[in-house]
Amino acid sequence: MGIRRPARGLAQSRADGADGLDHDDRKDRISDSRSFVVASGAVALAFGIGTALQTVYIFAWVAPGGSRGMLFERITANVVGIGGAVLLLGFLLMTRWGPSLHEWWRPRVLALTFAVSCAAGLVRVGLQLLLGVYRSPTIDVVLVEFGASVATLMVCGAFGFAVSAARRRTRHEEREQTAQRRAADLALQALQGEELRVKSEVAEGLHGTVQQRLVFIAASLDELAKRVHAGEQLSEEDIRSVERRVDELRERDVRATSRLLSPPLLEVGVAPSIRAILQRLPTSIITKFDVSREFRALDDPADNAIGLSQRSLLVRSLEEGITNALKHGAADSIRVSLSVVDGVEPAGKRIVLTVFDNGVGIAPDPSIDGGLLSLSRRIQAFQGDMKIGPGNEGGTALRVSLPAPEPSRNEPEKDPASTLR
Image 1 (cartoon, helix red, strand yellow):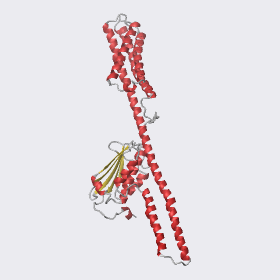
Image 2 (tube, rainbow, N blue to C red):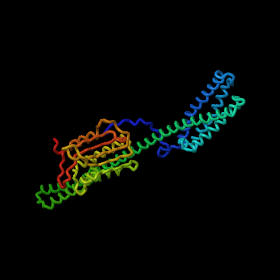
Image 3 (cartoon, one colour):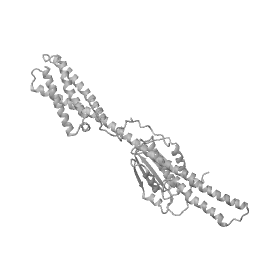
């Protein structure tokens, strides 16, 4: 662990189907339909009861001589007419119309809602006539009642569709975040698996080949010692044969094992090593790598001006940034940049490595511990600095700065850490 990040605070929905993102299954449609019916039904019920009470009050007390009473009949006509239309639209959400009905602004959705509203208006007016609410209504009264029904149901439908669409978007975002975290977990497992594989190869090489060759060399030395003890004169070739075995062990086996322990292609340069590490990530993790022209000049594989210790620090910083992005940030996109910038005098130019991710982010002043703390101390030993905090576009940004070497060539590497006491 290198940093402590805030919890995501999002509900983890169960995965449906192979990838957990099957948005149009029957369970989701039933849930969307229920949300629509509850939201629209509440508005429709308030309209049905409220307008009935208002109309009866006006006819009974404000305009005496009008049709007195008929409260139950009016409520019945309202609830049956408009409520039936709400149920019909809710049922359509569970059919093949379901996904498109969330896009209420589409012409066919508006046309369908208007058609259902007109049908509900006719049913409501018909029930009013059937139940005796109006005995001999004029055409104006019928048109007003019909128009009120259509307008009310359009409002109820719009509100219900909005609530259902919001619920659908929330579910979609939760499942995307779940899939994103799963992809990050798989990527982290792949990195850990690669690390275990390398450790296993190192252990096998040390325990097998290197140990076996050391045993043979020890046996050869023991034989020479016995010959010397017996008073036998040893030739130069006898000694040289043991020396060749030691050189062969050092050049072939020890060097091969040391390459496994160091980052890939580190002896070539920082950029090739980072590119190789990024290529190891699963394809579900989007990566982008930018290298400035000034840095390429310093990191020339033919004559690299950057010391091996500094290269190792930069690559280890990248590895720590990727691990934290996947383990703590659940990121699915990582962007890396290498550049050379002008430092504050007399510091001169600085090499800057930046690792951006699109994960859950981090507090402005995070507590640093574990691998990042140890890495930060090593960077400070090279007169560098490390900063970590929220990115400009969300997620987290890790920035490592080291002094840039002079562009002169063929100078022996100086390790600043070797001067520490």
